[in-house]
Image (cartoon, rainbow over all chains, first blue to last red; front, side, top):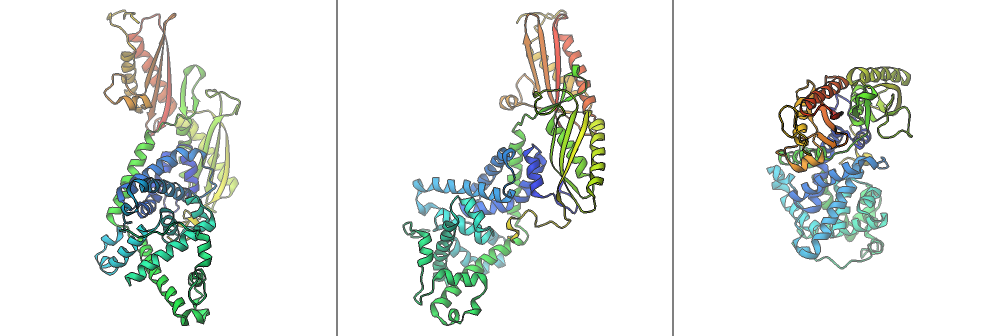
Length: 186
Length: 220
Length: 113
């Protein structure tokens, strides 16, 4: 199928089709949501190559699980959950061997793309990247999903696998820590 | 860079107990900022602690706004290339995954000819997609004989298809046209013996549905 | 198995039969490609047994079963292509097999492309 003229096929229909083995429907979903999920993974893992691997694995995993996907959540929310999970597992596995210092700084590739923007915001971006790198994996996931991806607390709780109040706590704590760093930068 | 991460604490308790020197909780100040109600509370502007907390959050929000605005702009070439390469790799892996799929009988019993259900479903979905303002969802094809039949049962078939349709269609009209076209495609394009076509309209398509696939309808 | 071909005297191995069947199927108009199974993907392209064809053999009485998985080009009627493939494969196999051997050919269309 082609992406249609005027009317785009809703995710829910495409997800059902993909679950029934329609590869082209799945390809539309991957094209539609790949970029934002890549951005999420880059922010969580701090590395483009690892982010690509994480998103690729998440989509293949989703394809295998789609026949059981009953549309109880929106497809993108479901993908947020799979990608977040995959990234958190990777971060947790990374920590014992490498220590916190080795957690790479989250990248902000957009800033390299625009010289003007780079000039005005490199300092802020760098300060915030540093601050983000200092957060625990879950804090960072909660904050990024909330502030940069606009997910609801419910969806974040679901994606990260913790309770709604715990999400609020992580975000509060993340904000405070980020602000301390940003305050120092000012 | 090495941030000193404090030992894990009870974060829920911390949210409640994060109190500024003036007695306000940090979460209350932030809530006022999030809700845009800072102007309604003179204390927030007058109190040095509260106004500092508001200003600091402003710095953070600035960054967030900028980050989100950049997203809304045209995506950088490198990032688009990355997304495309991931799509290609995913689809390459997906196409190699063999989902056996149920075979449907083609031709006469003695001929031993079969067509996998997903290929038939694809043809019927394409028939629906070709109609203006119609998009197909689920499409299953199975022997009329029903659930008791063995995996390779022969005999006439039933198609069950779900569609979303624009408001220009009435349901009976849509069902009549789609049923007629699916039956014809089954006969002329495939050679399948389709006797029953069940059609369910599961959703209404609105022309400008750009936000339909975003979670919570929030801007990203 | 060591039964010899009536005219050439060569052994009709399952591999040779599969190759003939694959060639006959590919020549049919409307066939896009023979669909490799997982085993074929793992074996790689240079293996003598072609993708999309499975040959099984039983003795007493001698019996050969050929099974093909293939994709059909859009614009060709699936049933007609499947029928033509089945006839072409049966004919090609008959040239290789002893007259008394029983033969069955099963064609499954996995995709329309």
